[in-house]
Length: 257
Image (cartoon, rainbow, N blue to C red):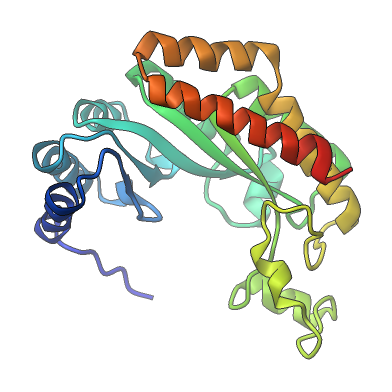
């Protein structure tokens, strides 16, 4: 339960290796909360620009949103921040002890937009206390907020977590007969292994399907993504957008039918 952080020097040696040996053209800093130590994050950010000079992205928290930090990340070549926003309902956020509010999510996304950073919000449907209404409000919230990307996941209580232990204690999970493959199918058409809210597993998948459709198939969203790709000259990303849109359409319009 201690935080052990690698030194910036160690990380930047690895970045140089990736650039010089593997010729990377883009980088994701795979750290649950890269911005937890702002000064360290800034130092690493400046080092990435110097060592690799490639676009990169990282994970953050909405309550870490800071104008100075975001400005420095953008100046160092960071293109996107990924947030575990989880829900648009403050009561649900409080119940899972996330330590954030929807207002902080709004501020973080707005600040990303102002600093030229893309925002990616991860959302969880089916959290304890969720109802059809709270999930509808969550989807409405993120659709209005309009981050650059959103991932709507159905809650899966992973072994080792408090949610998993509670589910076992309540008899919702049978350890002897559990289908462990179901715990790694977050985006597939398979049902989640268990529902921890007032909505059935089948309905959770339907709500997830609807959320993806509502968010990504909005004409305004599609036009905005295409316009941004053209404006920034990222031809490769424009092709990726088309491929992603096609995959999303296949996934959402067919696999759950």
